[in-house]
Image 1 (tube, rainbow, N blue to C red):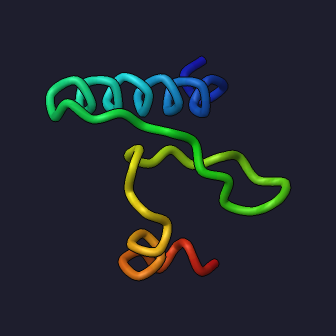
Image 2 (cartoon, rainbow, N blue to C red):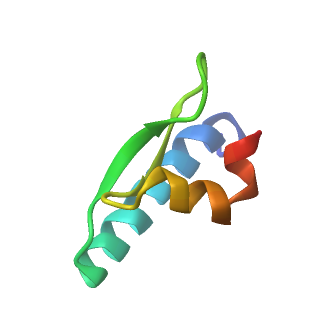
Length: 61
């Protein structure tokens, strides 16, 4: 049963951790479209895309 719900469980876990971190640090998240046809990635709101691009290798994929 757990194997069948792995994606849903992972998404719920990520959502709960994100909410806790945002509340603790006093920040918010916003969706960022990675590329056409892919799910949006969540990132801290207000961080310039240029800063993300120069610090994250995943952005260039």
